[in-house]
Amino acid sequence: MRIGLLEKLHDFRLMPAFVIVSMIIGIAAGKWYGISNFQLTPPIDAVKAIFHGAYEFTVPNTLALGVVVGLFMMIYPAMANIKFEDLGKAAKSPKQLLIVMFFNYAVAPFFMLLLAKIFLSGYPDLYIGLVLYGLAPCIAMVIVFTYLSAGNGPLAIILVALNSVIQMALIPVYAKLLLGNVEFDVLVVGESVLLYLGIPLIAGMLTRFLGVKRFGEDRFHKLKFHLNTMSIIGLLFTLIVMFALKGDLILERPMFIAQLAIPMALFFWTMFVVVYLTSWKLGLNYRDAVAVGFNSTGRDFEIAIAIAITAFNPTVALATVIGPLIEVPVMLALVWFAKSTEHRLFNRRFNRV
Image (cartoon, rainbow, N blue to C red):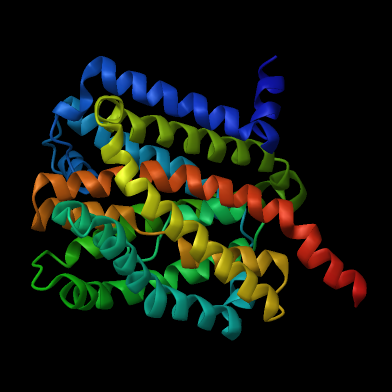
């Protein structure tokens, strides 16, 4: 019976139902417990408190760790499934790298700025929150969306690693260029890279290395079903935690959510479709086009939240916290879009050749 339920999790036709149920559970929990009344502890601070022996099991601390645990459950299986010899091949992909660099750093921040000016010019706090959200490319969840859409995982990891290094240098530049004088601890960027990318990457590498060494490639491959299951459960758990953070706000102030949802949804759909079709036109195969598309579209909400908490007021921070509530469902819709267009775009080209 349990296996049957787990197999249903892998049926992508049922994913919208699981996502909606997870969102409802999160909203209900947030409303029931009044979670948004608590000042959320930044996840990095909660992890530091554990290492310093100063952690307390409060609601904000537990919720902060919930985000970390959920993201780890999502990303670790993708890392463990990667054949690391494929990483070297992925690194030799200049066309893919150039597409991602162009759209991430020459297009995305300015496109989000344009959307903020169009939709939120009369709401300065929401305006700042949206611009912050567009500053940096995602360093974690895009690996999962690439993974769910059967994209090129090794290429996604290479692109994420490159973005991680570049954004540590460029985020202060973009923040000053787009928002004026913004003071924040640049170490926050490095800590986020380590927490959300470094730890799952190291854990996945060790799991694969030790597993293949002990059981062999074929037997280790049989674990793929269970690793995929963990990733999907991690995604649904993360949705529950994120929607719980602002469950009562969603019910009490739906227009506040809608004000951000419209420009954000436009950003994600426009960026992904443009990059995905550009990749197709430039001759990339489906797996690479998906990896490039998601790596050019996803935003680093962890960094945006951290900067908002340290450099701005609570309303700006609230706008960045709402961001992933919109991003995750939209990106899942883009996974469906990619999978549904694969045959029409890429297989037909292959058949003509």
